[in-house]
Structures are given as structure tokens and as C-alpha cells.
Amino acid sequence: MKRAIPFARPSLGEPEVEAARRAILSGWVSQGPEVAAFEREFAAAVGAEFACAVSSATAALHLALLAVGVGPADEVITVSHSFIATANAVRYCGALPVFVDVEPDTYNIDPNQLEAAAGPRTRAILCVHQLGMPCDLAALGAFARRRSLPLVEDAACAIGSEIQVGGAWARIGRPHGDVACFSFHPRKVLTTGDGGMLTTGSAELDAGFRRLRQHGMSVPDTVRHAAPQVIFESYDTFGFNYRMTDIQAAVGREQLKRLPAIIARRRALAARYREGLLGCGAIHLPAERDFARSNWQTYAVVLDKRLDQRMVMQRLLDRGIPTRRGVMCAHREPSYPDGTWRAAGTLATSEAIQDHGVALPLYAEMTDADQDAVMAALREICSGAD
Ligand SMILES: *Cc1c(COP(=O)(O)O)cnc(C)c1O
Image (spheres, rainbow, N blue to C red):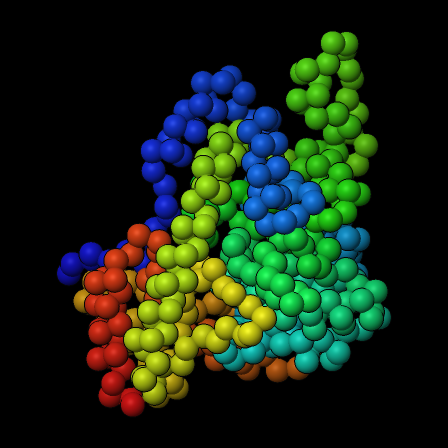
């Protein structure tokens, strides 16, 4: 079996190697000047006032929910149809995730379900820009304001995605809610090996993230290091070790420089998938609403119910084309027994997309020829059901 086409591949090269080398030889390898520079450059890239680097998007989600006041006995409205980190972050706070269903063509939270999900214990809304596709922030924001609820965006996949606000395009991460959380895991568009970022327009929230990522320490290492006098730190709030290292941040700064080219190529490849698969009745394609421009972190299609997901994926793999099933549903996992979550209505669409979704190979260096081979194989395997 030949496996010529990878499913995904990070865009890393000599500039990242040089950056890591620079950080290592500087003598300062934990959270320090490279992290500070990465935060400034990331904030500028997404149009945010504040950016705070952490060890992962999971850590970012945890800090974001804590910072907006989520605690034990609270409820957070979110989706089950996401990577499990989304719902896990709610449970880290001792709170209960309340799952609402998603839209069948964007795989994003259905804003019409919010009303049914809200109750006296609702403390926040945690929306997800699934696979990089911006969710309906105008509708979510209006609901959140009406109920005086904070809106946290799980933007783990959405670096470089855009949304139309008041007639102009803006990057995800300004943020449009209260906080946005990004991931630099290698499966995302930019990578630092692992890593995350919180963006916000609130100086107060940003200061809170900075304390919590470093055990609630009153003085950062960098300040103590540079001070001419002796400083004793104190630990004023109960916190965590969620630091990013300077080696990771140095790599991240190089990754940011690649962002425009990566997004342009991903959008071109997504357009080619759409064009090449549009005529296949057995394959439902993802929709991009008028207000949204995805970074296409993943291009996932949904197969017609007459096709068997595993059979289609196996037959593609037999031809050297690896795929992944679409997004999972947290509520179906053994780590989510009864009592650890609540659903507001049916989650039928979430489950159907998990059972019939197929994520296709996509990465910035993918050639047109490789993509044509993927589409030809998929069309052929699915043609029986047309
Ligand atoms: C990847 C992902 C996360 C977790 O990101 P990490 O950086 O690996 O912690 C959270 N939410 C969503 C939607 C993701 O896709």
C-alpha cells in the first residue's frame, strides 16, 4: 500500500529551526522575552488589544472560563460536537456543560437553540469556531448581551479566519466575545509543537490570565530578573503552571510570518474541493455563510446516509489516501457518564455528522495533483450512491 498523500502536515522549516536555536542559545528558555514578543505580534495579527500565551488551547479555555467567573454548580452552554477539550474545560471548573445541537452544514452551534439551553445556573456561553469556520457571533453576542452572560470563543482552529462585523471583515480573535482561545497543536494552522493563546480587549481579564498561568505569582520572573533590588514574590491567587516556553514562542513568531501564505493556499484548496465535489449527490459539502471566511483548518464533508463511513474511509486508505472521521461528540464518550452533562433538546445533528463525516487531506504544501487524486478516488467510491 502506498501512502504518498499525508492527511495533514505542519508548515515548518529552517526559519523555525533557526528561531529555536536562537532561543536555546540565549540562555532563557522558559516564559520570557520571546513569549512577550510572540504575544505582541499575535495580538497585532488578529487585531486584539491583549494576548496571553499559555501551554495549550485547553489551558486557555480553562483560564478563560475561570476568569469570567465560572465555578462549581454553574452551567456553561456549549456544543458536544467538538474536540473533547471544549467540554472538558467546563468540567475543570466544576461546572456542567449544557450541550446544544449544531447546524448541519457549518457544523457550528445553532443560535436558535440557546433559549432552550439557558437556565438560572447559566454562567457563560462557550462557542466554537469548528474546524476554523466562524460561528454566528452576531446572534450569539446579541443573546449573551441580552442575558448579561460572558461569551468565550473556542478559536482553537480559527487563526486567520474572518467574520464580517458592521460591513467590514475582521479577524477571529479581536475578540468578538469576551475572550478567544487559540491552539498551536500541530493539527492546527500554526504550530509551536503545543501551545495556546488567549486574546481579549479587557486589561483586567488579561492580568488575570497572566497571574493564573504562573501559580498566581505576584511578580513575573522577567521583572524579578531585571530588577536592581531584591524582590520577594507572593502567591495571591490559586493558579496553575500553564506557561509557554521561549523556545515554543520563538517558533511561533516564525509561524506567524507564514500565516498569509498558508491561509491563501488553504482557501484555494478548499475552493478546489468544492468545485471538484459539487456534482456528487452522495457528498454534502460544508457551507460558508456570507458573514464568514474560514481558514479551512479542516475540510470535512458529510456522506449521504446510504454510504458507510468506515467503508469509504477504508477504501480511500487502501489507495494511499488517509482521512479522519468528522468531529466527535463529547456526550458519547465513556468519560461523559450521566450527570456530567445536560442536553438542551436533541443532539441528532451532532451525532449524524460524527457518524457520516469524513475529513479530507489538506495542508498548505498539498499539490493540485495530489488533491485531484483524492477527489477522483472519492468520487469513484461514492458514485454508487448517486
Ligand atoms: C484542538 C482543539 C482544542 C484543544 O487544543 P490544544 O491546544 O490541543 O489543547 C480545543 N478545542 C477545539 C475546537 C480544538 O479543535
